[in-house]
Image 1 (spheres, helix red, strand yellow):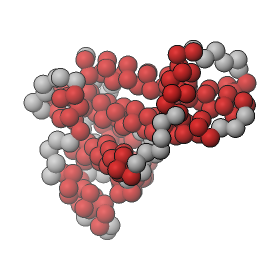
Image 2: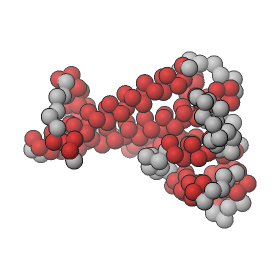
Image 3: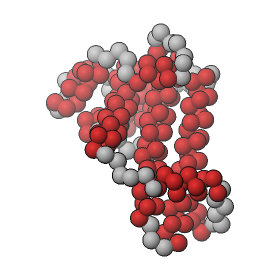
Amino acid sequence: SEERNNTRILPSAAEEEIIEQSEVQGLSTKELESIAFEDASQEKEIIRLLLLYGNKMIDWDGIANTYIGPFMIAELGDVEFEHPPSKKFIELYSKEVENGVLPEEQFFIHYPDKEIVDLTVTLIATKYTLSENWYEMHKILVPDEQVNMKATILGAIFHLKKHKVGKILDNLRGELQKAEGEADTEILLTQYMQMKKVEKSISDYLGSVIIK
């Protein structure tokens, strides 16, 4: 791509961090299981919010005539879901939205696929999952996630995005370990720095959303 041909100025501190983290040994089975669990938890939180609030109107930042469900689907267009039932749910929800339908919980409860039904029933019965933890982590006391729907919805979306970017960075560090030749290393370092910028912008945005 054109970006790869541009002159790269890589700060030495960043380069040191990459080299240092590239030397980390492979993840243990327990760590891999933990990452998979975190993946599933964050993806299921998105599904839960779609089920509970997808048919409600957005009431923040002057956005008008927009339902939360289609808004979330659009925001998550660049995210690959990995938890199979959640992936299936998102694909189904997206298809309905594309057809001009805003699916509600009854649609999924009676859907002829046990995985979809089980996921729906479980999540409808869950009052809080990541939302509560998210506020707790930022030392903010919110008795009801509906008090600040902007923080609840955008917090879940960008928390998931940040997690996915973190996995991409982990993969790039792994590739850097195996890189042979200066050209390959150069390309990987450029990709790594670009993803670090994405990660920082997501973190900054999350901070502003939660604080406001």
